[in-house]
Image (tube, rainbow, N blue to C red):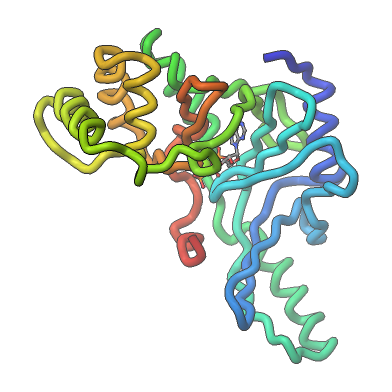
Length: 254
Ligand SMILES: Nc1ncnc2c1ncn2[C@@H]1O[C@H](COP(=O)(O)OP(=O)(O)OP(=O)(O)O)[C@@H](O)[C@H]1O
Ligand SMILES: [Mg+2]
């Protein structure tokens, strides 16, 4: 992975704006569901200036991710806080809009989030050589207006976006998956901490022995859903192992 600090900070400046002081998530209930927006400062400037940019963006519940088109890294920033839920009304007149805007500003960061990337750095440091093969290292680059900025190697795709499908697993493979998990967890069967398809990918890529040791370790992590794991070419890797650091409040739309 090749990156330099000023180039990384330039992506952050262009995505968040130069006056950004955090990344704030706001949610509104509309007639047909939820809409959520990211803001980057107290004046409610929209984060993500993507127009014609040489990067894409993504996010989870606790992080905002900048994905440069032509680089082999991604930039990850923790969501700083959450605005209060704001109910919107399709027929609102201008005065109400004004009031809503104020509510949103006053409600800034009513809930602060943890920084899962900081947790990942210590998990990675304490991991064995073998465990490190499946974790993608998170590297702290510096602060941007007080917002911690991290980079991580870019993956080819997440499991969720790949064509690997749980439904395609044969009965024989299912048995191998179950046996491997049993052995990894000392005979104690429990529901798999990551999708079965990913367990099979790990077995196929690393072999059963290494897979067992890796799974034992993966059982100590939280929240390994299909968009937290993926591949660099064919190598299975975990991109999000900091656990769930957002607010439980956010599960209303997930
Ligand atoms: N290294 C990477 N390469 C390419 N895309 C990535 C990478 N890391 C993250 N992403 C994309 O960004 C999304 C959000 O990243 P990540 O899972 O780290 O955020 P999060 O907020 O911690 O997630 P969660 O909602 O699971 O807590 C991922 O689901 C993935 O689509
Ligand atoms: Mg995630």
